[in-house]
Length: 164
Image 1 (tube, one colour):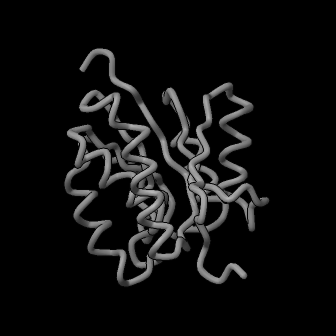
Image 2 (cartoon, one colour):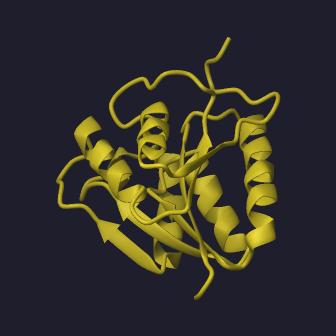
């Protein structure tokens, strides 16, 4: 499809239910003007990644998935594996990285792949430093170093589970 907008996503996994709704609305609002000529690129992790992927598909866009490791699915919370499976089946392209288990280095490699050939990165990010290698803040920094446009989506009232 000519004229596609290629959008990658990074974001927190531990969104509160109310934040998940706010984030879903923010993603929809940002993508709707480009629909259906959207290709969403995601690792389909819990939280922001799955919300983004569902929204891309709901708007008639196409999904590309990056699977960081062969044993990535079991590392996801049990409640998010069904959504992962459903989204993976709907992806037009699945890139499986050659690692056995998910590790911080594996996530870093997946994020590097995520940023290849995209126009913009949506970052569902509270602005805080990364909690480890491959975290949201690190992906944002890598995108900026590559001169990829970064659009931070952290709606007013958003919170992570466990935030004070």
